[in-house]
Each structure stands twice: as structure tokens, then as C-alpha cells.
Image (cartoon, rainbow, N blue to C red; front, side, top):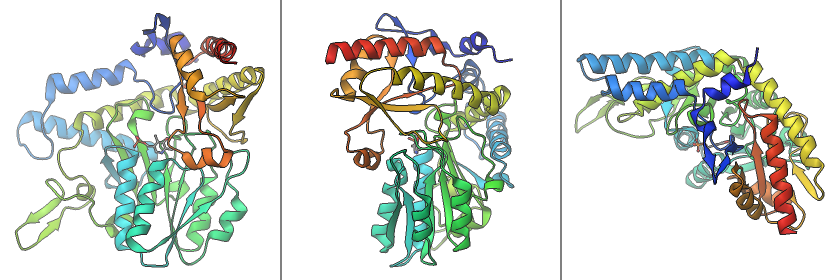
Length: 404
Ligand SMILES: *Cc1c(COP(=O)(O)O)cnc(C)c1O
């Protein structure tokens, strides 16, 4: 059974006071909180076996290497990748996308087309724009509708034999919309295009199966899945990872170096130049274990209840509008109140201990679509409570009274 008190006790930060009030953390879509077991894994690494990996013959280096590779296997299993070397450790989603977008420079020519969606995070827009500038490829955009869902009939019109790669997020960080990625992938494959799925916002709630999805690339960040910052993954099908050139040169990614010519190491090391975030990689594996022990169905059900409750309560507030009302969404509520700037509400409720995000959420095209400067975004995680939502609603009402 889901024991919320036991779960909350596992997250030390949830006991914190902010501005003299009990912290209510509703900024989970920006970064999730970290359970003690993950913090312990970090402390254990630095206390007991901190050493560089894949190089030393000494015991500490062996232990660190074993734990790091064990973590890769956990992550492989979690995403159901068919091979462990299809999991590349990166510094996070942004790094992962840049590896692929930069690599595609050598595969595209002038006039080729790449397709993005209107719902993307800047990190899944800008690297592709840079790719288009370098190659002369053309960027096309799947539009969105008022509900914050993609207009799939327009996607059909954009696809052609000129399409080389499609990149969309699994879940929108700004609105919470869950995109029909299986359909997007299948249709792209029919015209021979590859697909990259930005799973940064999906992975805290959904356990993706990359083989079932038939995704060519799938990327995520540990810090949104109860793990540490500065580490993430790039999943790529072996055939694609072999086709892409390395992203960075350096140690670890080579087979042989002479001043005449260097040959590259095989996967995954070809994309893992330099000393990685060893501790982060190991703790990522611990976080994945933690979430699987709770169970992704349990997590999703709990968050859905919080979403329904929060939505109902917010809509009782006069002049409040929610952006992103698609049927399929995660526990993200983006909203504004008539005549009040989102930043002002964010500032006042912070004084009451409540952490939400205000602004464009790294997704300016979505804000442009709605013709707004930004929103207030409350994003829930399974460790949040209905009582916290009540505190949040009261705080928003208080801010509204002060500002109107
Ligand atoms: C957070 C996020 C990113 C960026 O992740 P980083 O960890 O900052 O690299 C990209 N896309 C989506 C959908 C996100 O939510």
C-alpha cells in the first residue's frame, strides 16, 4: 500500500522550512527531490571508493568501475534497451540532444528536412536550429492547438522522403501534455526518418520501453527522476550510434592515438570522452531502483489524483485560466490569473513557503502561441499531498487579494 508518511520521511528536504513556513515543493518539473537512499549512495562513493574508472588496476578503481557499469545495466533494463552499450552516460538531456544534433551534421545535406514540435523545450529546439544553419537543412514545426496538444494531421502533411529526423518530447515540461510518440515514431519510420524522443519530463512518471516504442534515440536527465544533477543518458540504437561521429575528443573515447591518426573506441566509450560524473552515474542507478521499488504505476496514479484535485481547486479561483488541458497529461498545471503577472504571484507565495516555477519554462514558442509572457507552473510529484495543495490554493488566493 502507498504509505505517504513513510515516503515523505525518505526525503529529508521535505522537512525544511522556508521563510518560517513548512516547504511546499511544487517545482518537480524543474528538478525532483532526492531520497535518502540516493544521498547515501553519493556519500558512500566519496567516503569509500572515489577513484577514476576504466583505467586503474587498483582496487578502488575496480570497485568504482564495477558500480558504474552495474548502474548502466540497471538503466539498460529500466529502458529495455537491447544492449548495454546503447546506453551512453551524459551530463543530462541537453548534452544528449547535442550529441545527436551535432552528429547529424555529417549525415544531412542542403534541402533535407527535420521536424520539431511546437511543444519543445529550448534544449530540443536550439541544437537543431544550429544543425540547420550548419547544413542548410530546413526546420519544420508540428503545430499545437488551444488544448496544448499536437495537431497530428499537420504532422502527416510535413512528413516526406526529405524528412531525415523528427524530435519531439514525450511529455511537455511547460504544459504536461503527453504526446502520441508511438504514432509519431511509426509515421516517421514509414518515410525513413529517425526519431529522437526527449524523455526528460516523461521519465519521472512513465517507464518507457525503447524497443516497444522503436525509438531511435531516447534521452533523459537523472535530476528529474529523483537522482542527482549533472548526469543523464542518451539511448541510441546501436546502428545509429555507430553512424554518428564522436561528439568530443579526449581520453576514454579512443582506441589508439598517434599524431597521424586516432581510431575511436567502440560503444559506449566513443561518446564518453573524459572523466564522467562517476558518482552521479552510480547514484542515477540507485534512483532508478528507488522509483521501480515504488512502482511507476503507483507513482502515476498518485500524481493523477493530485492533478485532478489541484485542477478542480484552482478552477474555483475567479479569473484563473489553465494552459494545457489535453486529455493525456502529467501532473503539471500551468496557469495565469487575469491582470496579474505570474512573477508577482510566484514571489508572494514563496514568502509563504511555496515553490513553483514562473516564466516561460524554457518553452517560449508555447507562450507566444498563447500570447502570454509566461505562466505559473505547479508540478506535483508522488511525495506531495492534498494538504499541500490546500496550502498552495490559499496562498494563491491571498496573493490574488494583495495584487488585484
Ligand atoms: C528539463 C528538460 C530538458 C532539459 O534537461 P536538462 O537536465 O536541463 O539538460 C529538456 N527537455 C525537457 C522536456 C525538459 O523537461
